[in-house]
Length: 580
Image (cartoon, rainbow, N blue to C red; front, side, top):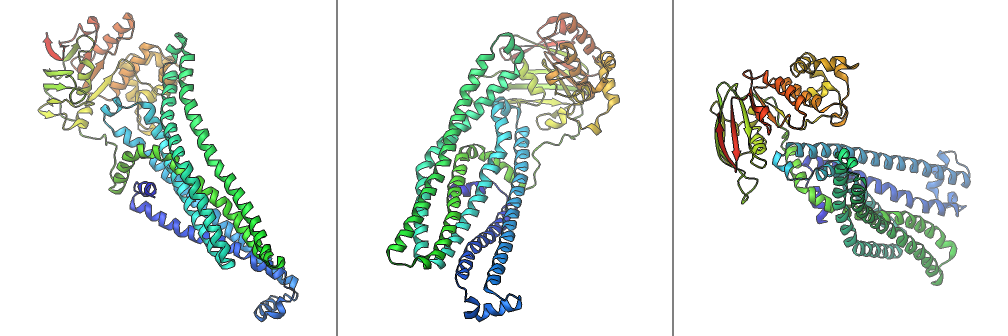
């Protein structure tokens, strides 16, 4: 029960109102199920009473009004009525399942959106510290686990318990002693199975949860570096590591599936044996066989309806317990989602923030940075000034903190101490306003599996893309001549990660993407270091055309790349030195 209440706590009050509605629908469905079973007994009894219309004046009156002149016609009419009832009952149950499924899918869609939104809104530092495979599993499997495996199981569990109780109440009316015995035996079986299997099912859920992340990680690593994997001949290595994780996952799933199937066999055996013992008992104590046949008919029908119910109760309970380790891991994120939905808060930032005015200079004022409390400072007391329109180079040995400094300038990391002022306004206090001024070109350009148009205008919907601005950006990046030779032009697909383009072409698309943003500040992080000398020289010449028009901040190892910069900032041992 504690797990169920914990699970329900992730839903808003409005969503919980639907649960109350579904509870009412399940109660009505349970009543219909029990009435359907209870109606069998009168029909069986009626078939064995040829003089029923003679001794029962009320039944005779009904038969007369329906023009039913014989006992046979009356029995047929009652059977037809029962058929109609069963059609209505099953139509209602079908509708009940449909609306439960519809609600569950709505919840699954909502949770998938909100989990991804939550992770997209997290800080850059969060993503630095978390494995992509885990986040992928959470988004891909979290919503499905919560809704299909827990919520839907909870609906079915509630429905089966209510139905079983309703049938049991009906059995009390038919044969109280037998009903009590059936309830006791069924209850003991269900509780025993749950108690015996619960620990192992939770354990296997834990194993599945961990192994799922691991095998996704190895898939990402194997396919993400496919070129190196094939060159080094390491396909078998990645396959072995993947299979190690996936085998653990599959074995845990096998054990869970086996433990889920065993209760059905046990329950079926107990029910059949119990019915046979009941027949023997009734005959032993002297009951007339003809008298107990109708009762046994109802009991048999009830038993064979309760048998799958008992099995499903155990199965759905086990499914919930199996998924709880994953749920516990996601619980913090799910509570965040509930709070946002309750208060109608949009988690993702709105990127229509007014730009910070940049007319004079950018002051980096005594900033220090470490990646966590107690860790060494990567940057310490860094101070320098960048006037608008200048080309500034950042140099230094590997590990000096160049990329960390750029991440701070990009607003992705917050300095541990110090401030960054853009025309006297602190960019840390208005990161969105500062980022609206920026464009960024990294060493490895991220390209989606889409067209050149979609990659230059990354993240813009089709109706908002400005083709003229794209052409202008491609022209400034000196890629327009190449694009114009392509049969599909801007609609040419570049392949996953730009696999159909050369390294220089990928970099030029990155530059065009940056220029498409019409930035005030262009930040280059080793943007040409992976290129050959000739291509690097050509792209550097392209970049230099913007000198004086926009502010350029560039990290580079090659001295030739920074020959034309106005001055350099040398980073070493976390300290900064200005070199004119």
